[in-house]
Length: 127
Image (cartoon, rainbow, N blue to C red; front, top):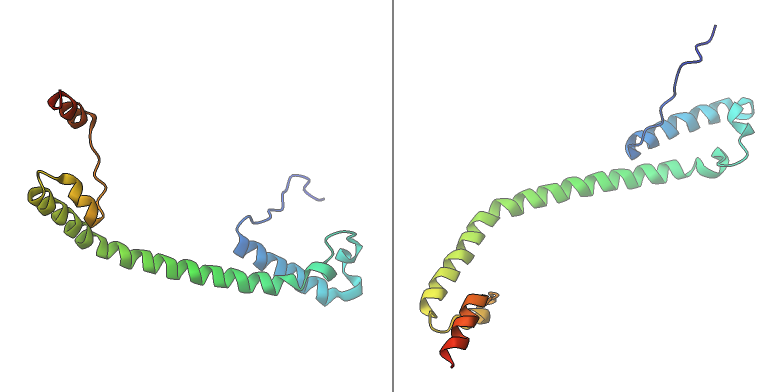
């Protein structure tokens, strides 16, 4: 007696789906003309079977690039505290050196934002 309460899962993970597709295609090919999958009218394995190898190669490439990307990000992040401290220290020194002309910091690449308070103060001083 068969169990009507079962499901057959299809992986959503691309790597797992490619692996399953490869297994299905290999079994289909092994059975040849006796394969029940020959009854498929659309999405035939004769049309899509060859795409599995290409998808697997691209999946491997994507995984390798992801690993390289993660390694590069980790190396970059390890350098960032020293760089950030140099930038903050430079800002602090320049703010002291150009206390009267803070816009000069823009020449070093800093974005100088005038607050509404200092703009209001300048307006009242000009009256």
